[in-house]
Length: 343
Ligand code: EPU
Image (cartoon, rainbow, N blue to C red; front, side, top):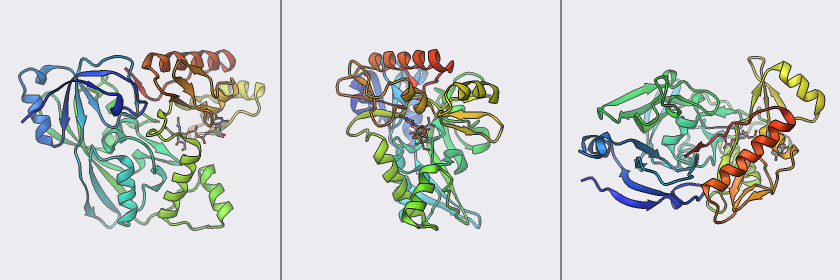
């Protein structure tokens, strides 16, 4: 049975807490639900919008496309190989629930990615990352279903075109899969032997402060949760979508000029010779912390995060974001690119 819900307010279903209506919404709990949508006389051909945890979207208007709200549950150990544990999770599982489960069951490897909001199904779309680990470093494969044929496929990580907060699932052109396929399950690879990843400055500091030189995966999980809680707002309390802008990557030439003018700028050399600048630092340097447009504001502890102070509308978030982009461009000549998808 396929149940179509009409005019559903999406405010509780996006982490920014922005109001917008889904004219038609279908909850997907199994692969069979996807097939029912594909075979449906009206829904089958209609454009689709896939909604996971809603932690990476800014809703500025009602949605005409059929919203498929992904609620596929389940976590299991799929394979215990000599070089890795392969864990499979339903796309509707909360990411943090999966990380917690993996730590509790003794399959380390996901601890640096603790407390990232959103669902398992959304994690490859953005290639989520934090504290020196990106999803692509731990992804085995992605189970998808084609939204035209209803056929399932297993995509190995190598075909997902992962980049910094980017993948084949985020684009609809050049063979991208956005709107064409739906992610139903994700298989993660927890490598054996486990190696702690402590290179990120905030974690290296924890090692120094606590004197724990060889932390367990659970210890790192706890540290990452502590670090994130101290500087990032909890979306269940203050609406937000995590980092609002990507950290811009520039050439050494561009950077030399900028560093010459602002020696304090936070920057990281990348393996390919390019330089990543801290967008939070750039925004902070332009004096944006705590500033607002209507209900949308720049978080006062981390300038990279935009928050909903109460009754923000998507348009206010977008106006604030544009003003930030203009001021950073005016001062540094750098164009900031939003991380979430603006709808
Ligand atoms: N900074 C400031 N002022 C600010 C914010 C940051 O001066 O208001 C400086 C910090 O002091 C630090 C530097 O900028 O030296 C970088 O800040 P931070 O370490 O907080 O990390 P980030 O670059 O802002 C990135 C990811 C986060 C991820 C952390 C940890 C992006 C866009 N963001 O943030 O990812 O959790 O590193 O790995 O890549 C997300 O994508 O939603 C997200 C939260």
